[in-house]
Image (cartoon, rainbow, N blue to C red; front, side, top):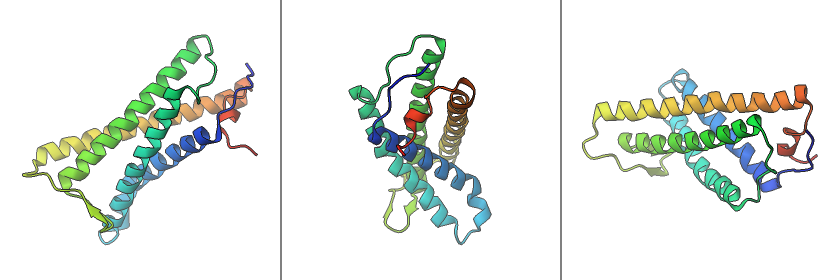
Length: 173
């Protein structure tokens, strides 16, 4: 299947910014303990900052999607339905990850590079804090797994099916 559709530069930029912010935030979260206690507050601050920057990027993506401007022509079939479903799940997981991340930062009273601090929850409940952190981790890990499947599907389209699904989301040359 070859189509003349190509995403606009704003959609492409927001897509790759989303991928970068999620990837960098997830990697930092995985490696935070390996940097040592002296650097840990800066790594946590950077992780939170990536999550907070992701929020307006996501809002922009959703606004573009709802405007219909960034949508490819509807393809028939099960694969197209699966792709639309996966995109919806990815958006929901990004939202859930951000909400749980903000709740986690609020429960901890996290400080971000000394620039601002989340007002700590009154009488923070340790069990609730651990639960929120667990949900944040679960949402983030599930998001990364599904994003890797999404990337794998794009590569399958490019190298096996030899269509332009991947090319229409790449920046222009």
